[in-house]
Length: 449
Image (spheres, rainbow, N blue to C red):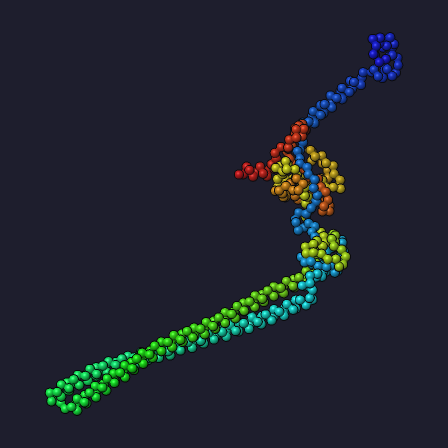
């Protein structure tokens, strides 16, 4: 039966009369099967030459087109303690609505009248500035008066010096006249003595001339004393002139020094006023920060701090808010090997999670449930997941996107060139990237250049 012996049973026993043998050894099914294989091979061969659209797939999620439309957390610029909540999760708030009220936790801001007291300090310092301004003005007037007085004193001393010099000149002339008189008197005396010796003059005449000579000598000494006294007066006048200059220079310098000191105090007081005004403004703005307000219209998603009395640090996230108005976009990631094939403005097909779709990646025209998009941004630096981030906006030429919440998942397909299916299979078997692709807009630009 198993044909393991040289004595074959099929030659000795006729089995053709049995129905089972008739079904097993019937040969017609091989003929049909061979026809099926031929038709299938022809169909596969034809399919290999059908067009296939190369594409780049990516996994992403829904986000917003503009950064200010994305979910954000509201932070407090100051540390504080939660005192009261004005909203609950899920509430809609408008821009400027109060979300919660916080109180102060730093001891330097505990004073409830801090702003009013700072205002009083500013007022007092401003009055000090005014007082210093008056003192500076008074010292300027004093310095001006000293300058005028010095001018008059110098004129007076100069006149006195001129008078002394004129007196010296007068006494000098008198001294020269006295020297001339004594010369004349000596000649007369000597002539009278000679005439007396010759007997032509009496002895009384000689005595008279001697007396006159002595009087003339006395006048010469007196005139010389007057001249020396006048010269001393000139020296005294010069000394007085220098003394006046030194005295008033010292007075004026002292007045100017006092003025500069007053100005320095004035500037210091003005600086303190400016500093207090700055603190006053900061305190007012800090009081406004006790009320945490909504930066834009939106919905309260989640309170990151709960309860009343809970403290937080400066910059801590307090509550999460989602803007009510936003433009949808898809954020997807592409492998580095595929990034040269992605261009701005390129068409993208998108399949949203939870939305019914029938997708044929190689034949986008017969796919159903996908939506059109357009590349608006390509990140120039690789992300933490080792891929490049792509931002896709709705295609205005395609039908609008469905109403899907931000954060939902999405699958993207960037459509490239059309190639035969056999070429695509050969490329994938060899691990080659898709054909280098440039959109028509880029080609048109290169032709224009």
